[in-house]
Length: 323
Ligand SMILES: Nc1ncnc2c1ncn2[C@@H]1O[C@H](COP(=O)(O)OP(=O)(O)OP(=O)(O)O)[C@@H](O)[C@H]1O
Ligand SMILES: [Mg+2]
Image 1: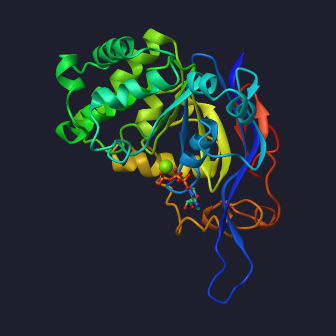
Image 2: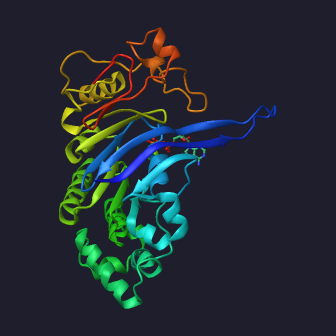
């Protein structure tokens, strides 16, 4: 059964009128996104900066509301559960945020940070909450836990702070963990440790994970399937094993190509992504990728490609008429 089902979800942010008072415009941050994540899976989301990954994550964990569409976790509509029973909702889904510095209150200890959700939504008393925080710190290998409980955020390294964020996200035993770029602020040596920690946590808890990352090697190594986003839309969903060799969408191929070249593992010709990412305020007509695509034809400029599905795979591109 799908643990998470996202169907045709839209989130538009209004842009203020300019100094001439011209009509309001909207940022099309998430623009008709659909996919589902199976129970126990690590599902990846990749795409360039600004394509809507964090907005999608915030919609799923209920930090912001969607304009249209449906997001269901364990068959229940997120907007409804959040409205009717916020405590239960917090126990269903949790997020590891993108920025490990902004996430903390600098004046509060790690103990305060970890016990807060347990006291507010976990139904625990003070003593039980502290003992649970202790166990959580051990789970993320911050030992001796007593030492870390009394520290302030600035006394921890960024990697240690990221571990605390993971511990906090796990504190209410959620069914779904949404990790937004959990390693993007870390240097390479610490990255591997945090990736291994996520792997261990996933294996031990059998928790379902939605993992957002810029780093293709991270999603390749951790995920079973990957969704590729471009300007608010999912353009391809594929098996992680196929990412470097069997992707279909020209955008995925370009991402893979630039990544592989950077790491000196390129085979075949390099595909260069032309130009800048267009603005999500007035996205291009037809296929949004067409101004940067070397295969674009007239139909791509005029008509938005319909997503084709088969066997958990998806591609939205005029180059294909069936999968
Ligand atoms: N609260 C907001 N108000 C207005 N625009 C927003 C808001 N949040 C996000 N956006 C815009 O929506 C688009 C998608 O942003 P989002 O943060 O989801 O991208 P992202 O894929 O997570 O990027 P990055 O990889 O840099 O983290 C961007 O154009 C961004 O400027
Ligand atoms: Mg982001």
